[in-house]
Image (tube, rainbow, N blue to C red; front, top):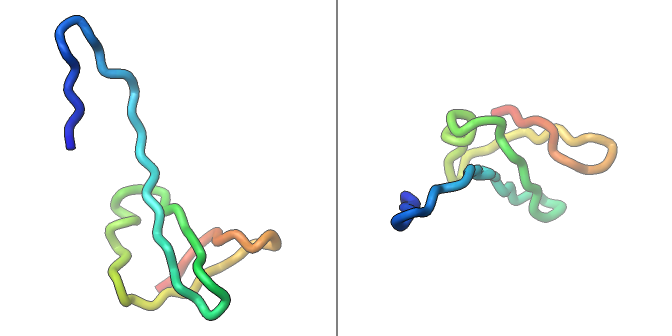
Length: 63
């Protein structure tokens, strides 16, 4: 969807956050890839190894 401004209005800055949700034996884990091209490598049903930090946050993934 593309935003449009009406007469006399300007569009502000925009941003998006892409996230991937993994189902694990311990529940769901969420990961935010660094770019859209990184995000595009994830496909439903694919298998990944998650690297977690001491706080239980996914910090990287490997296929």
